[in-house]
Length: 398
Picture 1 (cartoon, rainbow, N blue to C red):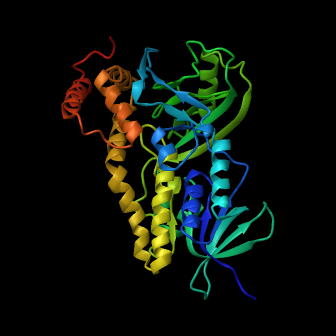
Picture 2: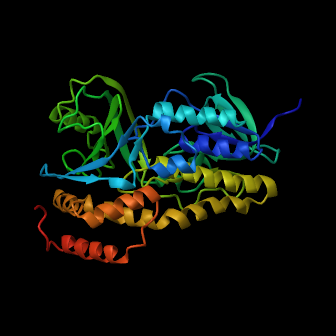
Picture 3: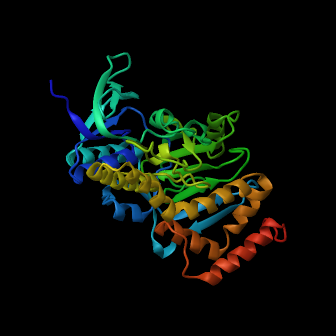
């Protein structure tokens, strides 16, 4: 009996897995995209315009375009950061967005399968078997692959089985509720504005948010403190913002990794990507763009591996990603560690956001996904102001 051997089995059908499957299929490889189905990751849904350009995403998938971010301090003081003329923050609903990406993978040549991954098995054959069930309690089935790609999120089962140390990655736990947007904009909710709450009562070590999604909105919070009630914080937000009257569409929760894994591949035939590789931006928690970018790098590395048979090609995905984005992640990690540690520091952080130089460079870095180097004096000014805030030499409020 002849056995089908896929070039690649991609476990996980989120933005990362779907992008990886699409790129591999377009490169001429046989691909099986395995997705669990029926589960949506909690996500604010913010994406930069660059993502639409880099990955050929149609504007029609945007459910809203935010033109401003409002930062709210522990004292209740708010600072608005208008995007200005350089662009907007696109908003997507993961329910529709992820499915569009998966369907594009299928139309590009990948085979879609709704199933739950079980484990990777090895026998006398040189290529591994991916075992799965089409439904809970169903029979175990198998698919053989020359390369296995784990895009199955934080706490990745593929990573745990194949990469030493993957289970020890620290995570923020995120929870949000998708609600029907209020009929009319108000001070508490604006369909063109992303609100970010830096308040210890809502999150002791991260932040809470209200992001517009057109007809719906995401009300959420993240924290690495396992004893903190995420649902309680969201309930408190909805009460204080008069959003309890809005219909709840769905509720979702999941862990978000805080640091890229030191190794993404097993040195043989397995590699992880996206949240499974830990590539979510610290401080902001932004993951969609980085997941898709990481997925593309993994697809390129896997394609080279499939062409040459050289397992060392898989290592190039991580080195390429870290060369491009590692410095930004390092800076954001330091920022999260320091500024999110107390309400006193959060208050000063929000005050910093009122600075025009900070706003301009922040938005330029967000839109372009790289540190801005064209204005060295602006960086010097920000550094000096930052030091003043760190040392308590500037007032926290104005």
